[in-house]
Image (cartoon, rainbow, N blue to C red; front, side, top):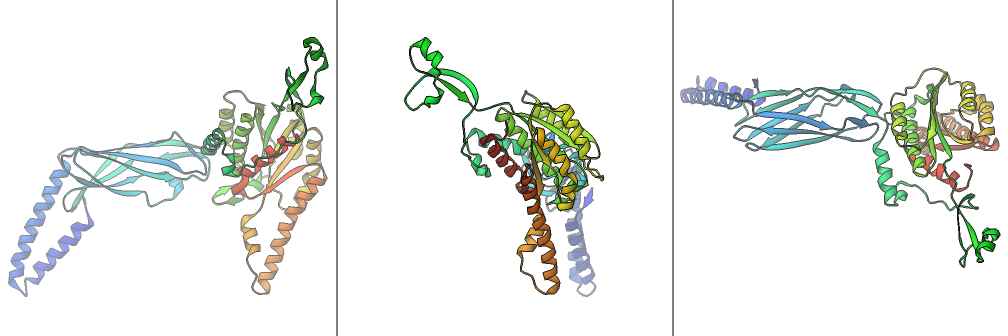
Length: 437
């Protein structure tokens, strides 16, 4: 049994009335009557709360959470008391969230049920542990409360953002990808994969006439071509220290993992094959490109456990293993972060080596806070110096893009929050222009 704040307020008021009876004797009698009524109410409420187990609670949520997204958690309450009760519910969420507002109040009718819903947004992947559900019940004036503890401890795995995949899937099914900023890009040139031979109709390209088939059928026949398919798309993720930088509570590695998962999903929907490579001081993970059923689950299980390291990434090891494992010309989408020209030039030789056999798209990041600082007006000499330094770093980022282009390497400079949409747009653009072939 727990004594509530209201209990102490009432008892202090009654004590005050009794104390005032030393000056006004009638108040002493009133105080004794109030005290008797108060004790009777306390005993009555205690009996009503403890004569049976009246409140049960259970938690329902997904078996795995999506990193960086709002995940719904529901607490279902059932009242078996034959009268109305008020409850306060405390759900023991994983301590990593550091939230102190998971305490909810509700009123429940006799034999009634209610559901409390809230949302959690994890910022890093891993295993999160939920605890028990504590429910405090009140009746009448709420002078005392009873705590009910429901054992609900469980571990939840936080995976890369799979909720984003569902969002893309629904929009793709309804042909509304433009709502997410996915651009429609006109295809140029001619497709090269043969599909079938059909009779010529007005408007067909005369250059596709198949003269041998026309001679056999005694009618004009034309070749029909379809989009090139089953190209290999590899997401290559740098797990080194440069990917530890945080934005809005998530590291650049987490943004890269979410984007690579979405890109793999879109690529498979486009009949391409998606694969994965991760590396830091050494070559870590290699999943061959495939579009078979279960490939997305394989990629998700592999990305779930990826962590950044504190060392410098070894691009030489990456080149050696890419040459060893990937024989077919592929699109390598490299997620990294070059801070300046010096860091980029150190890896230029290896990027050029990769670009000789494959199409390389280097994805790196704009410091959004730095850009916002540049956009603010400067006040004073010191502020001007800071703006000049910030603009120098911003200029070097743009210079990296230009240098990579001069060396035949494609690049994408983006803010972390727009990474997924921008990398998909770049992939669709390169596919439409038949750069991936």
